[in-house]
Image 1 (cartoon, rainbow, N blue to C red):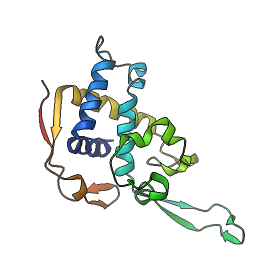
Image 2: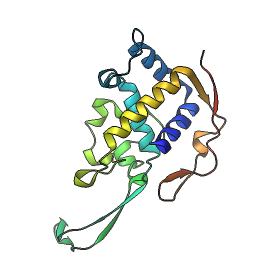
Image 3: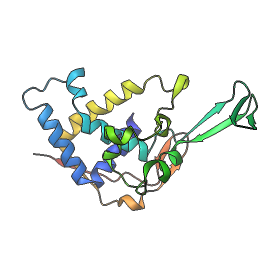
Image 4: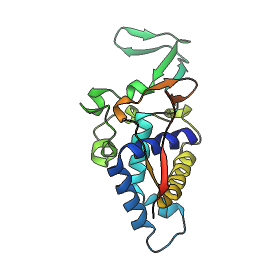
Length: 189
């Protein structure tokens, strides 16, 4: 959650228009009441899209490993034998142009508008894996990130001189930024 939040803040620092729109949503949802509830967090639809887009661009778990538990046929005549280990490259999957369009490498929360999500296979976005072996804490992680971003963005503005086009990542156990995050934080008001 900490790494995903750090990546999200860096992307917001690079995309001031997205950060400003997110702050507007936060101020609308919490205009009359500062109490954070499950219901109020559910109203942060743009924030949900921003977090998902950050997880698409920089999935914390860039690859996952799976083992075939039984022989299965992936297409006529092609059988994957039991015991075969698969490496799923989530980082590459989330940047496929035939899935995400010509701007697959661009940070755009509108990729997660309901009408755009409906056009894609449900397994085209899997930052928490999918199926029976998905991350047990994915809902908690999303709620935690929303609360952290809510608290930070209400009080602080994030900026950076790092250029989005120049970001480079490395896969260790998790996805890490090559270099430092180098984000400046100033009081919002």
